[in-house]
Amino acid sequence: MYSEVLNVQASIASGSSRSDEGHVGTLATPLPRLKVCLNFNGDLQRLTVTVYDLEGLRAWDPNVSKCYARVSLIHHRLKVLKTKRTEAVKVDDQISYNQAFNFKVEEKAAVDDVGIKVEIVEAASLLGRGN
Image (cartoon, rainbow, N blue to C red):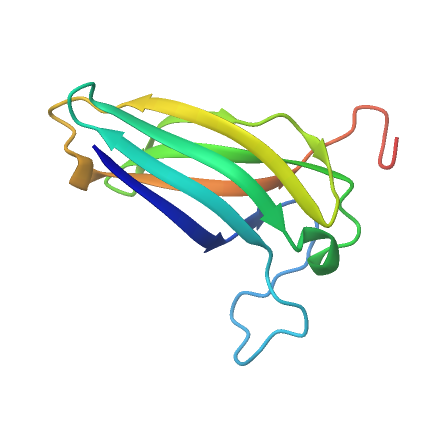
């Protein structure tokens, strides 16, 4: 069994036009930090991705009111095999998701051939922004 806790910079996917890609140097506001744990059980051929918490989203983008984490299993960095998501939660200084997702990894799709993509997505309101 393989297990690792990762602190990663969150990928923000929203409808806003803000983009810090391509900027050189230090950002005025640091990117949000997402805590994720990966656990692979070879006997069960199961990869478990646990999304714990997210810090700093409000400081980075104060216009986001609700968001969720979207976890995708990707084969050879090209094809999305399966996508799962957390419940949408209200943005606070620290957001706790504490949700685990299990992905079946077939024998022919070796662990070296699959990847995980975790995105933080702004939840759209059906009644309009801010409701």
